[in-house]
Length: 139
Image (cartoon, rainbow, N blue to C red; front, side, top):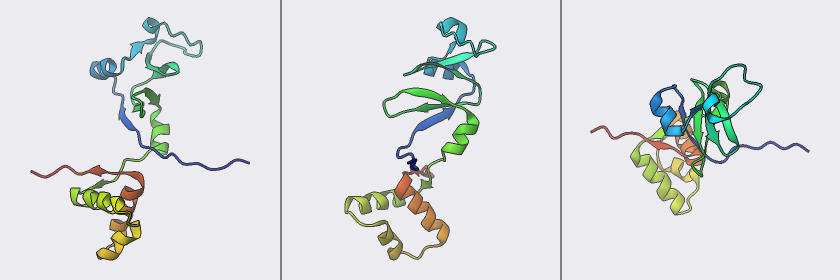
């Protein structure tokens, strides 16, 4: 029987722009120079080394970085359907979430402490469940 699963980890990714800086950063090579020969490729192009070998990468694709530092390309349309940015929350809320989790409180207990609007509740719930980014301090 087929079951439904969700991804349980976050990844780091940046959109490939074809710049020399990104080519050098990720060890991207011209397919002809890499020795990678894929008969499905109608023309030469860029490829990125991955755990599975070289894979084709195009401008606009995303370079994902896994938990072991490995990289792989993801087509832009697939990336946008699969991944969402983590919510951005203030340092105060980040500290509150970490404190509540460390003390084994339930998520619902945050919402009993303050008066909330729905959007605020959803943001904090997503941050609790999926992870978050802390907004830059305005200095």
